[in-house]
Amino acid sequence: MPEIRNAIRFVLNDEDVTLTEVPARQTLLDFLRLDKRLRGTKEGCAEGDCGACTVLVGRLVGDDIVYESVTACIRFTASLDGCHVVTVEHLARNGMLNPVQQAMVDHHGSQCGFCTPGFVMSLYGLWMREPDPSQAAIEKALQGNLCRCTGYAPIIRAAKAISSYGAPQADPLRAERIAMIERLRALDDGRRVEVGEGHDRVIIPADVDDFAQVYEDNPEATVVAGATDVGLWVTKFMREIGPLIFIGNLPGLKRIAENDGALRFYAGVTYSEALPTLLAHFPQMGEVMSRFAGEQIRNMGTIGGNIANGSPIGDTPPPFIALGARLTLRKGGTRREIKLEDYFLAYGKQDREPGEFVECVTIPDLPTGEQFAVYKISKRRDEDISALCGALRVFVNDAGVVGMARIAFGGMAATPKRARAVEAALTGKPWTMETIDQAVGAFAQDYTPISDMRASADYRLLAAQNLLRRFFLETTGQGARLTREVA
Image (tube, rainbow, N blue to C red):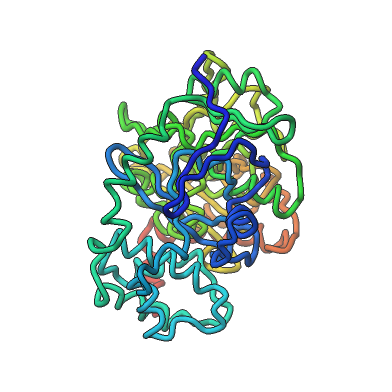
């Protein structure tokens, strides 16, 4: 058993913070505004959508600090152990605005001003990474920031002009980096952290093995990685969620392995961390993953969390199921492996024992000659939950006959689910539109979708059928021709 520390420690701007008592449900936003009176960070939506509460959180990765934008409204204070939190108040120094702030002023990037601090922090994070970003990079960095005054054009102009006001190398955050690295190293003592009791009990394991032991001993605890789902349990549903086990800091769960014709993500890998490797193996997922939430949520949400919570509308389970992914589940020192599709049993019910957790997901490489595509249907293009998400994979032999079909959808049932009747209707048949037209009726055997605020049941069923038609047209080269004709 590792040594135990009874305090959460982090750096807030330039202040060392030590908390021996912290409510498990307390968000970083509330800590900043209520405890520290740092009110530049705003509450707009309390669900990680609008970006008004954006701050930067830096953490040690190897010998450097990586700063990422996050939404403070659903980030728990207790999860910040060992981190450096940077708010908008820390940007201006000696009476001089930061280049990001000055560019926003000069290019009239602020209208009512409520959302402005969040935009400034997102652009600050981008500027530190890319001093001269493309418009596409700017738009991607701002996917998670909403301006209700529709002032995006001047904000984008400001983003393009930031480096004309100064270079990131001269920014205090860069100048102070060596000193901050040493401060964060001093906080990283390798101990397990335990504070509070009952619903306010917080545990931060020392490593993955310690986590396995802690969770086996406390199976009633809520495990939190990125909090992009659990945060809403607090802010929207007012649930008691403690005791909490925070695992977002564990390097052993942030590994990515590429070997034996497969890609393996450990459960704590965030979407931002996963994307380069994921898209190198499966470029067909690029369009969908570029629309997965906003930058702040991609920096927080994890591959394992999107699977473990069992949501029927998660965007990664359908493609992973279509690709034949397998899960490794761990309880204490015991591991077992199951097909990802078998993990989802019913709405809110997964094949996971008390004290057992998702350790990693292994995704086989796509065999040569197979066709694969992923489609996301949502009301809003960016930063929106899917009405349905479909992944389609087929192998067509040299005779033009379907030798294999795997199709999975989210948003069509109580769990992410394969379309086995459709697969059967395709397999062994010629890969033709006639076969497709005959197979689409089988979707009604596979799914009984519901009507809700995102889409009606009829729309979902029709959209799924049309996505199969679209997949056929694209895999036979007709989709590109139709696009050119429409254009």
